[in-house]
Length: 312
Image (cartoon, rainbow, N blue to C red):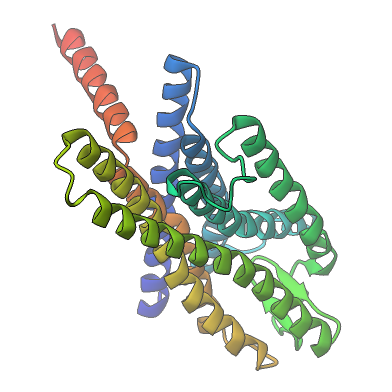
């Protein structure tokens, strides 16, 4: 087997495996919290939702891509090809939407007397309605994807076709190919713009708050500032991570729109970088989230006790 193929295959395999395991840890941790406390905070709901969406991104794109790189083709029939492409389009869009929702929630939480008073995301009912709305919206927007998707017909790839390896997305002409590309990019850019604006407001509020409490020696005020700063910084890191890989993804995507036939290496690069957020963001969440860390430690202690009892 060619060394280049081995490197690509191992890279996709590691990325997909680490991402799926990390997202599963987050979901299981929050499931444990829900079972023990019967309630999740709004930020916990969004983070668990983000973990599920990112796991689905890796399952519908990372796993098939890894199989394709290693030459495991023709596993899916035409129906499953269309279904996988449709689900992937939805969850990829939801990844940016949910991250945007998280940044907006953080901005609403820390900005006092903000102009965003009409945004009641901190209320579970409104948050649930927001999540359902973005699911329905993206399901409707991506409804055309299955109609353009099909199994590869032969070894040759027609012009204006996105070759996903396990499946192809055929466009009838250059106009539809470019319109689809710019429509997807425009939707993502809109959510990224909201995300960046929310992050700017968070940074501005933290700076003002820090200057305000510099002369206050109250321990409680300093503790509150530290807690708010940490929560905001965690969200800002996620936003920064998404923006970096979003930028790389779209640079490659714009290049792909300029050529009739895309080299497979370019497609592989785009798939890898577009999946980096789904595999790296859960690691960032686990490292920065005390609730998840405590849950993992508790589970490990219980496992250690069970092993010790069995040995006795």
